[in-house]
Amino acid sequence: MSETTLDPEDNKIIILARSARARNGAAEGAAVRDETGRTYSSTNVALPSLTLSALQVAVAMAVSSGARSLEAAALVTAGDGPSEADTLAVRDLGGSILLVADPDGTLRQS
Image (cartoon, rainbow, N blue to C red; front, side, top):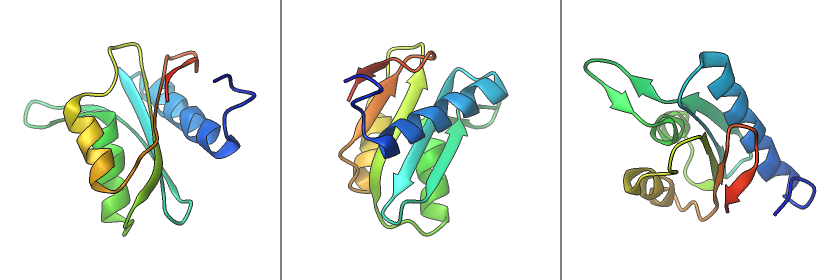
C-alpha cells in the first residue's frame, strides 16, 4: 500500500508517529486514533525504573484520556516491529489496524 492509496486518516497517524520519533530522537514513534477520531502520539520510554514501548505509551495516553476503543495504531521504527505486548495492547481496545512503517514513512506492514 503506497502513501497515495493509504487512507488519509491512517497516513496521518504515521506522520504523527514519525514526527514524535524525530522530535525526541527516539528509537520508536507511535500514534493511535480512538473511536472519536482523537489521536495520541508518543515515543518509547527508557528510564532506569520504567521501560515502555511507544505503542504502550500511546495506548496508555488514549485510555487515560477516556478512550473506549481504538480505530487504528501506527508504529514507526527501524527495528523489527511491534512486540507481542504491543499488539496485545492495541487489541485490548479493539484495534484491528496496526500499521508499521520505517523511519522514512515507508509502510511495511498493515
